[in-house]
Length: 569
Image 1 (cartoon, rainbow, N blue to C red):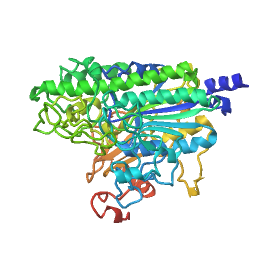
Image 2: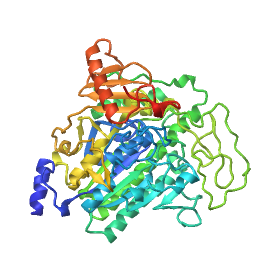
Image 3: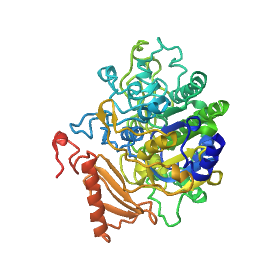
Image 4: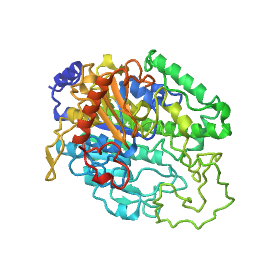
């Protein structure tokens, strides 16, 4: 019987019901603030051999989308809803409106909460960022921490950003970690990306020993490559000189590789290059920013390799569905890049923090051992006493060939790689292929439940749960059409979009709608709104209907003190 079901699954994209023994393990890997063409198998020059290998043995989705920002993406990914429906339409502040409470609500369930009744063990590692965690008061309220939202074990940070060398508010399960209560957390040898990878490997191995009869769900949320640009010198050294040619040279190489990989349609006009290397005042600084960024991604890929090796050691790789994706496009924020650089100190200038203190600021003024944190244009990033972003020009390169960045709902803000690797569930003939059907974060929950044979609940913990928004991607594994009947939709900070088939309606906050034919112009360089007024009107009406249903604030009303009181007509 087992062989019969497996054969049916391989031939039919696992269309047959899954018996308990065949239910796959599920691993969802999410990286942070990375552009569409950063990893090797999507056009980048950064060394990502382990992700490339997963892509070569699995599928690469070419038109998959996130929500343009870190915490809304996490809310949508975890719940299968649009972020506003989960209460996280913006960031972690309460804006007085149900779609923007800044806290995961109870009218949704997480993937973990839905999988547990189906017999899955559930683990989370890394960045949580769907509940406030930037103050001692916020950290005292743990009703939305991972263990309260369906996970059996957790290791990571509750808030959204911070030092890779000494992250603030590091948590194991429900307890804050300090050097005093956790011997593995020693700031002089600690690096967060490695810690995330190593803990993920540990959960896999512990699961094999303690729960061998159960499948597992593992959510890995890296903070690489979010600012600050922190990396190990050995990883940075691999990239010395690789970016000496500047923005245009790196971008041209990516465009050429994208074409070779079949990811860049010859009809598309890539979005314009932003940076001019000839006008850069400090090329050594700009090179170093991208070197450190690449090293951060490289280190993450090394950790993914260790995870894959652990699954192979346990004989579980063939029976594990692995997804890899990114939370938003490349980040153009200029954190730490002010005009006046902070000079290096000869010695610590402030008293060291006590071992039990937590630096709750995401941008601390000092390291734990008392060194002042340096920022400013020209300060070379990487060490623990620096706090710098890689800047808009490199973000433009990261997002090649697309327009705009994190925050915006143009393609550069919302386009992500999606790798799906599942030897037992993706037919041999499909492996290494590109999958062009569009998809969105809400589909991850639907796919996990589908392949697990789990049921999405109508009620949970005495609360009515909103209907699932996504569709399963499982048919695409076998080259079959997805069962999608509705457009893809977005809103963040008043930036908004709707995609229906080849057509995309998109606008920045308080700006008029733009219309693009993405089959011919995914670079969004030819606005067809004036030529297609009826299509614009119909798609805008569809967006408004979704926004009203999904608890999105009216256009222009999300900012300011009146945001929570605004009513949609």
